[in-house]
Image (cartoon, rainbow, N blue to C red; front, side):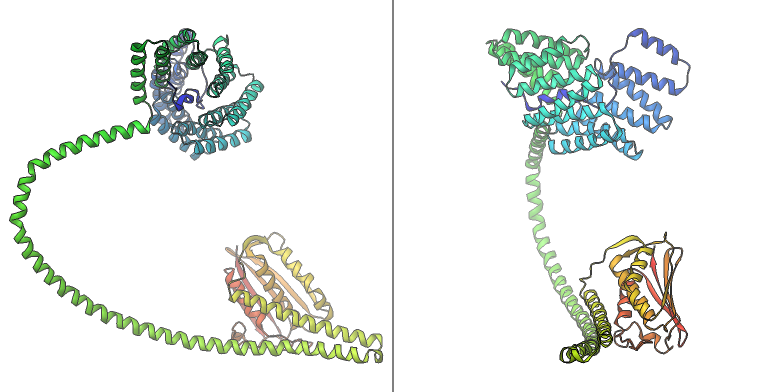
Length: 630
């Protein structure tokens, strides 16, 4: 016979305080001290009793924990409530009542998360992962243990980190990934040595013995289990029961059934004393196997029956499904008996109602045909109305499309003309220099080169604006808003346009506060700034000033670009942001442009959730202000 895959479950550590049994005199002393005191003292006393009894008398421990829980709820002590829920789940786990344990662990974890208690969350993840191990949901369990370990490292909780490594080893052991299991248990043992924790160390030795047992390294498993049993500092009956069972199974695998029986009987006695279902199930199967090999088939059968009985009481999906299936079969048998009783009556009733049904069906069919015909006519009428409305909309859209196409045609003709101008100048100057270079002195050549440079910049800026506009129209301009400071972006744009301003001896004044931030797309914002400041330079008189300032509003930021140049007539203001009607004018030094830059600014600002406005007086200058959300 062979132990089931759930053999590892007896090892799982739940993350509540490992308080061993206290003497009766200490309990009586505490009881006398708390008698007549407030609820808090009574709650502490009940929790103390639960901690003292949880391994030897887990059912009694649960009773006292529940009393302490009621006290914490009455006092609205939510941290204590979450802790006690975890302790109650722990003793229910020890007793093999995994459904209830999972419920308590989950409630505890949810409450710790609500309270933002990192250690409680780490402990809760470990506890829930234990039940996932039992349910054979190993991947989920491993993920929860790793999350818990990460929190433990941050909060420097070495003990809880060790317990998670311990339970991770159990999961890998159950998955038969023994190398990973050995790595985890050795990690746990190293932490135990660092803490000087003998109790935890012995628990890990027990697990190490189980891993060796599964690897069929029986001499090594005997060595580890023996270390637990012989330890003078270790007094945990639950783990001692398991170590004895491990010794029994290892001895049996090595062919020493008499020695195996000796250890198995001791383990069985402890299991009955503790009344833990898993240990009773485990040792019953081992005893059945021992007696079977000793040809004592009567006792082998008796213990196998015990094993099956305990198995039925444990957390088992297969058993639950089987019981539900048997219950369903019983109900179906009862239903069939009732069905036979009423079949004759049903048949008579069916025959009696047949003609009534035929007549009723005929009438209903006629009414249905009439109704369908009426609905069909009504639907046709409604459909015709909808088609007419859609045709009207399509006709209107076609007119809008024709107008848009005509507008774009005019726009591209204008772009082509404006782009041709700087290119023609560049070609003319280069031809002159190429054919007659020796006729010009250095000063004249420099003047030619400066003109070439200005024409190149004019053409490049036009192409750059045209490319940005095309990207926006085709939705290929990726919108990536972020919280950014405005000042560095303004300074970057000023540096870019510094030469343009110097050529006209124009001063750019930056009054942007360094702490102001807004939610913007960096590239879109730079395009807007570049065009507005470039226009301000273009239409300012030589020696003038361009001012950039930012105002922080309640839910938005206002950015203004101010010049004292040519200004804009009142009749031209509505045309500035429209593709079909935008205006083009030369600057104060006859700089050329298409007007597409302002259209681009308007579209980009709208895309970022803002708005742009203009205040301008012809001959006095302009103020372009746009707002963006904070």
